[in-house]
Image 1 (spheres, one colour):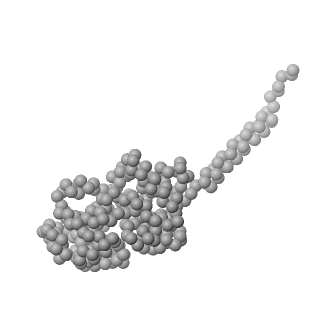
Image 2 (cartoon, rainbow, N blue to C red):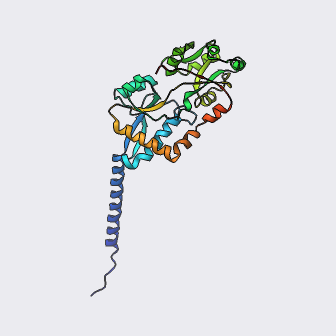
Length: 286
């Protein structure tokens, strides 16, 4: 048998064909991966910085999706193209106009309109409220011994906030604003005396308003039930099931607590109570 002769042209053609096959397979795989990726849309915000109030719910949702990719398929988050308020976001979700998930405190009406995923995202920490006050007023609030004493002061709150319903139900006087951001300047300008803020909110808000003479009040806590849930459309039961499963997985392996504790200004419940604050229990109309 004659020995096989080396043919550089033939070998080059084979190599070229092999290279083209590899490129083709890579493209097919990439296109397949893109095609299999699902997207869910959530509300956009002015900032996605770690001190922003939306940071934790956004990051927790990413964690939940990662933990359930193997079961439900790869899913990525995208932001709604417009920045809208919470009431508008609920309407957009309810009418299937481009949102898949929002997060909100829960009310009977919201649970009738949307599907609530009943896992309290802040594990009850948000239900303990610290007062945001002017620096000069700490001594006045330190003298408050009863809820009747607190009623001598006026709160500032959002027109559509659930907190406003609670204040009304407990006969606590207040001033409202349609928008969130003006409330801080209104407080500094003495339009009212304090704002009711979740313990997970107040540190970030002070960082975001460094030029205003505001502080976290040191002696009082308000407490009322205000679970904060993810919500999806009533028809989207598969997504609801997935999110709840992911939340339970993250709770079981400790990753949820680790994320929550990484939030700037996070205050654990035992730390809140260790300062021997006077706690006023408020009735919730819900």
